[in-house]
Length: 475
Image (cartoon, rainbow, N blue to C red; front, side, top):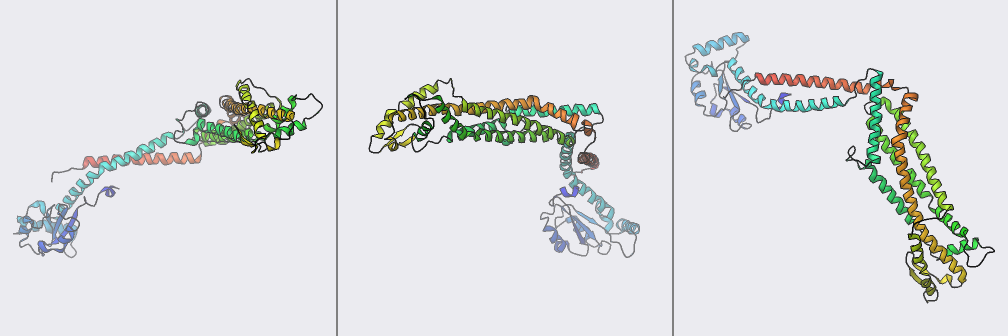
């Protein structure tokens, strides 16, 4: 591992020379220069000193070829000499030879070479050790962090009960933050979990879809005249029965009834997805709880969704059978629309038989020329009254759905969910005894992290001892 941190430009170049060769023309010198152009990292080992001692002292002393780490002269082993025999003869050679004995003892002999190599390599390694310690610390900290995130190994029912209630409490609190209070701390970078924004977008889309559902007939007043004809009977002239308006209202409500139900299905599916995501995150340390808690969550979400749909169905039915509003905008808007009557009548006698009516665009009135005045007046009044009231209805539908959504979300999060989960786990899910049995995956991860932490600590201790033992000289 240490050698991985030693850069090529830091390593030593061991250049082996022969005493029988002129150092200035030695091929090995040229080769070493290709990787160490200045010679500062080159250590020259001169062999066969016993065979060619003449002029050797002068060559290694003058250092004409600029060997940065100097020279070490050695005697080669001959034939079958043992290591001890070779070293003894080498020592005798450099002590008694008339020429070689003049060389400094710091640059002769295999033991000196070994010491020099160890010393040089120690200096190189010592430069790398701080980085190695840094990397070990980073891995050690990461492993300790992962280990601390593992669930506590529970050993008793009371401990398991406390852990279970903490999970349920955390699940409930997280849902309150992201679904009700609109806080983003838990999932700041996950837009799909920004629930308030997602739900507001769905409500806005419903409002736009409802507004887009208002289709104006190309044949102006034809639909209203058909309703009048269906409700025709023996009655006073110029009198518009309430049932006529309700009949037209029912048709229009039926035409948009699928949109609120579709909205409930879409928004509740999204909330179920959010709850499932939060549940997995909170039960991650105790996956043995997940089947029971997931079932409880799905059950309570389905029950509340059924009630939500029932409320929406009731709202739609109420809009069909009752026409009422206290909004003063209805009267003002209705009067404004009725003021367009003369404009429509005038267009019926024009050559183009068309007019541009606010809110309807360009309309054709040619088909109304032969309509009896009483029928025209009643149809026109019915259409303007419905136009003014329909605006109120659509606004009320969106408001009611938004209020119901908020009501049922809070009901689920604050009341239903916690009770259902506790009941499912404690009564139907086999109890919290499951929490006492650590899953194999968690146990394996715990064992792996413990082993990694122990090995990293031991490695750090050994390297620190090595650092303390390295003696860096000024040479």
